[in-house]
Image (cartoon, rainbow, N blue to C red; front, side):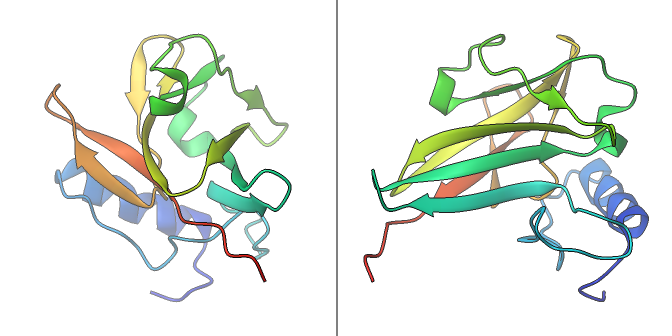
Amino acid sequence: MKKTMKKTAYTKMNVKSRASGQAVKSSAQGKTSKDKSKSGPVAGLKKQYLKSNRSCRVTFRLPKDAAQDAGMVTLVGDFNNWNLTQTQMKKLKSGDFTATVDLPCNREFRFRYLIDSRRWENDWCADKYMPNEYGSDDSVVVINGYNIE
């Protein structure tokens, strides 16, 4: 697959891989909202390492295609003790949802998106996936150590 694939092709590929129960990483993984292509910003994780407190500011972005007419999406994970209401995401004009959280370095955090307080969704661009106790997978964001240059 080309690195500059269109969003629709990326979405279809990931829906197929998720339906088969396989946690498949795509060549588009690692793209962030800074990446520009003809299809616009790409959903996923954007990481910005901060020198001031040696943490990482992570922007989570759930695409409109995954949210399917959602009125509200909440970011839920290890970093907020799986609180179902604490980290509500902002709906953008594009229909995507976004939230930014500062996380400590040298850790991995499990997370998922809760859509309209009823449906769970994983991040299609997560760093990796791990099985959970409920018979499905959690998305995982990996925060590496901070390098002083």
